[in-house]
Image 1 (tube, rainbow, N blue to C red):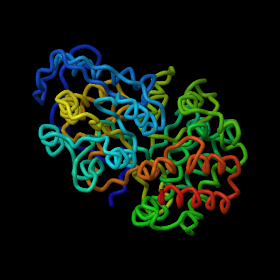
Image 2 (cartoon, rainbow, N blue to C red):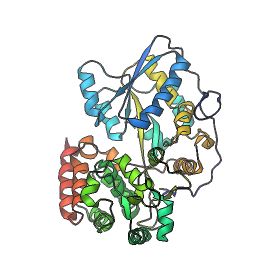
Image 3 (spheres, one colour):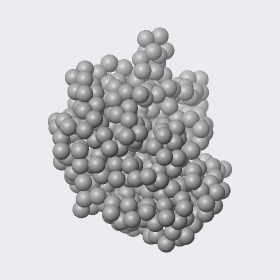
Image 4 (cartoon, helix red, strand yellow):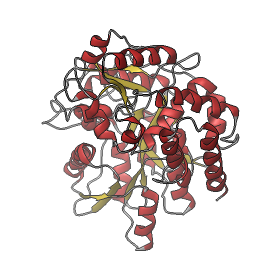
Length: 437
């Protein structure tokens, strides 16, 4: 497996972007032909809100212009599988759903909700996607999902003024990271802001440490529950994470304050307040750039990013993503999957920022700045050697449900980072039940 460091790669752009004037640049020639769908209605469900929903609606607007279809966005609640279950039971499933977990795709197929991708969408996937990304959207060898939006989840963003004032520099290893955190703390600012209210961020903390420290083979085994959460490798990773979470003053607002901090607020805590914010660094994926855009900070000057530090021999490369899955066997649903698998759709969101596409034929020049370009290059360069977010591979009852399973266990760990054994037991008890069910 390649554990890719962001910004370490310099690749030439290839392919083309999407069509359309306005926000993001000049008109570009479409790369895929779409059918005429005048009068047809297509509904799309996703959990995206705020800035993400706003940009995705622009992606759908372009599909409407090119096909004549009438597209409606259906706001979904998390977990989306539960939301879709109610829609299917009521006889009103959306045509397409954006599923944020591999496990959710598998569950949709097992429930006989999902339709395989059509021939045209399959052509786009084979043309534009590495085999690894195609396999993530397949169940038992049959293709169901089109990964439209990816995430490089191995990034740490920092306030450059805070780092400079503390005399710190971008760390390469976990020990260096803790030393940098101490320097920021000594300068009078909490080193990290942690979005503990949204426990998916805590799973990402754990996964990056575990992948780098235990290695990809163990990572794959734990993701499939082939080894237990009481394994010594899990103890070691939680102990390492506890070195940060348990150090007094290292987490903005303390452990309890972090448990009340949602993801957008964690970014604001780092980049609002000039050189005197509430925190110096925030860990999360490329989506952080969208939240930074809601502040006065400028990416590349006020805000910079470095790869998650190496806990073992190499830095980790954890990815996530949202896949489009057809829930109706309709021309409109299949046309939308074809569109989302093309560079045309990806270009619209890429220009806006806060987005990385697994589409290898999206021109890197489409991204709005060098920081996001480097993140995208690293993701594409990983090719088939990617490790998907572990919690998103798990049954949703364990890895993707607020207040339950892994999410609750890691929130409890944030509250009491010394209780490694208790956290392991809670994780294993929840995992054993979820994987058995």
